[in-house]
Amino acid sequence: MSHILIAGLGDLGTGLAEQLIAGGHRISAIRRGEQAPAGVELYSQDLTEGAAMLPPDPVDLLVIIMTPSEYSEEGYLQAYVRAPLTLLEALGRQQPLPPVVFVSSSAVFGDQEGVVDELTPPRPERYNGKVLLAAEEEISTRSLSTVVRFTGIYGPGRHRQIDKAARLARGEETLPAPQWTNRIHRDDCVGLLHSVVQGWLEGREMPPLVIGTDAVGGRNLDVLKWLADQQGLTLAVPDAPATGKQVRSLYIQQGHYTLRYPGYPEGYAQVLAEKSSSKLKVQS
Image (cartoon, rainbow, N blue to C red; front, side):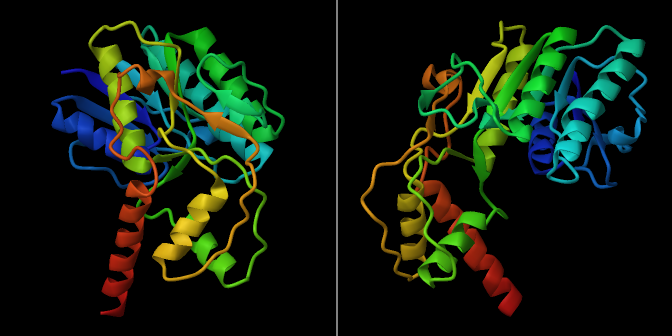
């Protein structure tokens, strides 16, 4: 049984904790709130305030899955740089730092064109990508680590694209320019993180970077049209070439993880069904 500390017990952290507990591991966790899955030893605190209450006994692996309290440069700096460094410094005073799995984003690639993967140099233009890249580099200098860069996450409770498709079909918004969309289902985020964690715990040589994205991608307009169609709405989209980056995962392509939802429509169909079921429950 390994002892894993998860910093950030939101949707992904909770899913990962549940899988690891089912596998017989001991899980400690840090989050601002008071809720945690059964079996998790919770240390409720806000790392952005400088505190760091930690388990008294050694940790074998640290997973950092932070979420900013506000979507601004300051919010990102607090969540992705200051909070992790506070944690690493506190943990380093108790023990040699264990390997770290750090959740980042494909935003570090910036607005590059064409196919990008784990071998593509990052080129962020906006504050979110720049802060995340700085965090990745800082963590990698302090401990052995694997950075997991996710593309856009969708799944249960994440209805933004579904709602956007409906607004577009009703003429409430202007159709966006055709761009490549890069997505990954929430369940595959959890599964991929579990795969990386298991690799470290089993003593395998793990890569410093893993990209989490599905195998399809596609034009944003095609996804939005399909989502409108499934809601009984009509959305006409032009047959124009897409611009932007197409994100690929060498880690997944090489067979280290098998996607449960390789892309739309399978994953989005599940989200639509979940949303419809929720509406029925509310109405009843």
